[in-house]
Every structure is written in C-alpha cells, then in structure tokens.
Amino acid sequence: MKLTPLGAAPLVSPPAQLSSRLVAVIGGGAAGLVAARELRREGHKVVVYERGAQVGGTWVYTHEVESDSIGLDPSRTIVHSSLYSSLRTNLSRESMGFRDYPFVATGRPNRDSRRFPGHQEVLRYLEDFALDFKLDELIRFQTEVSDVGLEEDGKWKVRSRTNGVDGENVLDEKYDAVVVCNGHHTEPRIAEIPGINQWPGRQIHSHNYRVPEPYRDQVAVLIGSSESAVDISREIATVAKEVHVAARSMPEGSFGKLPGHHNMWLHPMVISALKDGAVIFQDGTTVYADVIVYCTGYKYNFPFLHTNGVVTVDDNRVGPLYEHVFPPALAPWLSFVGIPWKIALFPLMELQSKWIASALSGKIALPSQEKMMNDVKVFYSSLEAAGIPKRYTHNLRGYQLEYIDGLAAELEEWRKQMYAATAMNKRDRPDTYRDEWDDDYLVLEARDDFAKYLGFV
Image 1 (cartoon, helix red, strand yellow):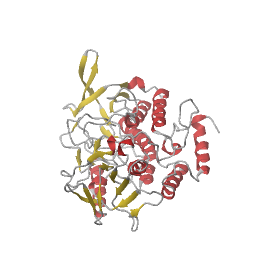
Image 2 (cartoon, rainbow, N blue to C red):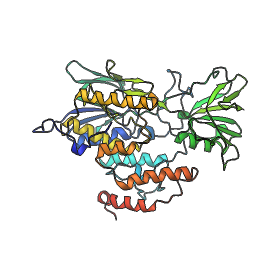
Image 3 (cartoon, helix red, strand yellow):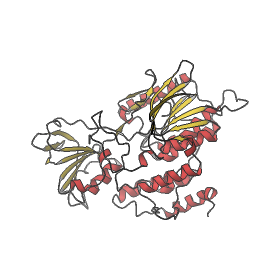
Image 4 (tube, rainbow, N blue to C red):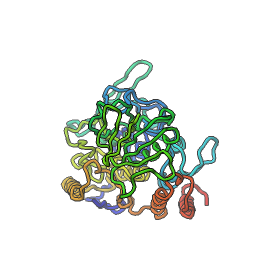
C-alpha cells in the first residue's frame, strides 16, 4: 500500500471550520503521549488513560517478573515492562527521537549522554516531553480501561476503573473517537516445541529476563534472532557455561561456534525436547540444557476492545487496518498508533498521530471505506504471494522508509542515512556498534536540523 503524503491528502469538500472532537487515548507510553500532543494541537479535547503511576509505558523498568515465566497462565501476575537491566537503545538518539523534539544529551546530573543510551535515559526523555507539552494534565494515572465499545448513537463508551483510597471506582464515559496506544510488548509468544511438556529444564520468555546472574554456570538455549536475543545471549554468555542460539533464516555457513566467543554457538531451529534434558536442533545437533530462553516476540492483545468482530487479531495480524492505523469500517473514529515493528517507532508514532488528528478534525479526508478495504486486501494478497506469513503483517523491515515517507511527505535525508549506517555498523561490529561508529558527519547534519527546535548550532 502506498499512502498519499499528509500534506497532499485530498479533501472531498474542505470544511468551513475544523471539527473539535472528544478523544480517548488508551495508554500513556510513547505512543499515547505523542498522540495526545498531536490531538490537542489539532484542537481536540483529550483524555489519556494510563494504568500505571507514571508516563513511559514499556520504558518504565521494574526488577519484578511475572509469576509464570513464559506467560501462558492467564491468571498470572502481569508485569507490563519487558526491559532488562542492561538494555541500551539499538538506534542512535538522533534518529530515534520525535522529529520536532530532538532526543539530545541534556548535560543534566544523573543523565546518560551516550549516543546509544540506556533505557533510563529514554524514560527521562519521555518525562521531559510530557512536562514540556503539559501532557500530565490530560492523563488519568492508575486508571485501567476494561471495556471500549461502539454505542448505538455512534459514540464510543469507555469503561475504566481506578483504585483509590476509597476502593475501586468504575466510570463509564462517551467519546467521539478512541485512539489505541496500549503497546505490544506484554503478551509473550512462545515457540511450539514437540516434547517440551516432558522436558525437565527451566523455561523463560525474554519478557521476564532482567539480569544474567541466574544463568551462571548453566547451559542455556536461546530461541530467536531479534535485537533482544542478540543482547541477552551475549550477556548470558558472560556467566553461563554454554549458550546455544537457535535462529531461523540465517545465511548459509552461519551456524557453528560464534567468532569472538568461547562459549557461544549458533544453530538452526529446535525441533524437539526430550525428558532426559536434551534439546535437538534441525541439523541433528543435541545439547543437554538447563534453561530455554524464548526471545520469540509478543502477541498483539486488546482485551478491552469490543468491535463485534470488525477488528480481530488472527495469527498476530491486527486487521483489517488501512496503513496499519485505521479499521476501514470504523475510520477515523477508531485508530491504532505504533502497531508496526522493525521500524523507528518514535517518528512513526508521531506521524501516525498527526494523520489521525487531521482526519478527525476534517483537515484531511481518508479514502472511502470501500477503497481502504480494497487496499488492505491487495496488501494481504501481496504478502501471501511473497510467501510472507500472516504473523509478519506488521513487520516493516525493508520498506519502513517508504511507509514513513508516505506519512510525512519526506523523511529527513540525514535520518534515512543514519538508519542505514547504524544497520551496517551493527552487522560489522555486533558487539561494539553502540560505542564505535563512522557517521559523525550525519550527527552534525542532525544537529544543524535540530537547531530550529533547540536554538543551538
């Protein structure tokens, strides 16, 4: 699908006056914060529901983990953050920040000035963003949304509950529109392994990984090849006896002992696990392991959202969604921010939010429901023809810049080049790319661009 850039989006008939809507935003993380800002900028009235006690969403670190380490028990104690203690960004601060609120080193005490900072610095950035744009006044903290549904009068009913000193308070309110920003890093996806129920070792999803010490002197099998899988496997290897990484779709000749590491091996996928502790890989290799760590991603989950089957999650495809944002039958009154992955999320969230705010005010017009639905079907057909599984519907690897250009008319050239430079550096220096790089000239270009927002040269 190819978007008409926002600046050139056609109007069916330009309104004499832009409309102001009452909009509920579900979630106070990065997506919810930038959605709230853009909606208010466009003249809408906004209420943000945040179940936690502070802004930040998944960027709020906790040492706590869930009572079920692989996340299958529906009655488990749920922890919403997936951060591990040592996590640093895999994009540079220049390229990952919001476009008109640069993520620069502040020089303040107790801040992380590194170009690829730790998770605490990202949280501080989001807190600064909320403070500078006075977003806290829009947010209801410690308020969980339990039900969102469309009423007969065309309004959206939002039921929320707040736990206070006087007990639980349940409130029903009506809105013109709802923007879903609840994130998708809470509900673990687990690889299906024949025999795993009889396998005697420990299993954990990366959602519940925090520090490497519990893996000291153990043999660990780690499944996955995501950014978190790379980080966690290398960190565990500093204390473990052996680390065996199982990954699909690796280049020919990649498997075997990993160079530069005395105790790490790369394997094809796991095909079975046995009750004697053996884990068997596709190439026939057998490892007797103490623990399996699943770095296998997450499921989209909207337990509060009820649309009578209009929006569903099928094999991790949220759909139908026009450009990963609008359900055609409910647009623009229901929308989603931050669904795609393998993309620079903060700029994406900002541009999606601008689009939603403009569609609600009438500044731009969406295509007809029929046209949007047809575009979605064409997109799904193209994925199927290319052999791309349904669960990768929202994976924008390979065309993220084209997608963002469609939202923004044109992404800054330095930012595009910086994404590419970081990807190449990560490939060439997988262990040190966060501390060694060759694109300082792009940093200077970014600073020149930031000058109009920050007042420095």
